[in-house]
Image (cartoon, rainbow, N blue to C red; front, side, top):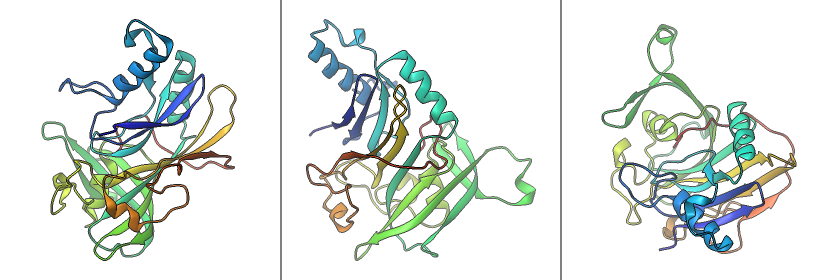
Length: 260
């Protein structure tokens, strides 16, 4: 199965669409990562003896069972600039989540206190209240709107205001909206392709050297036909849907972390 496709590339950055249930960066499991695969491709192009001789570093991450757009730096300077842009919330990332229940209302904002259980790798989300201010955990904020529906599932467009570990999965689950396939956070069953139906479908960023604004759209995975129930311009599952478009304006985005 195809593990990735390249959505955009220039001499400074590369943006890939992660298609499989693989980690973005190398981890203890030793499984091939998206970064490893991309380095190998770049090394082959340059006829480099080893992929390790090619500089390529992820500027942001998504969970291994989440699909969609991931940004990589091809130079040290580009990585420094992208890190600063993520920290300064100058990069906007949008997700589509397929959930098992209809959200009420259809548009809104969720704010929770997020507590990470590292041993179990699970994040618990608690609704904010005045008494929570002194408690442990980090604040997680996202905005959502209903983007479409099938007979049994609902599709939410999610914009992250903060970027925390498992944030989208934990916050939606806490509001009774588990993501299809995410049994860790309350879904009924897993998906055959090993992915959650959570997709990093759009990223708006500034090219680190030229400062041109790029608007990148990642097609939905073709391995799950349910995505065909949602029609978003530029985000279809068929070939040729990905693209780069000029975009004006910028809203708060994410930090460099595993946010899904």
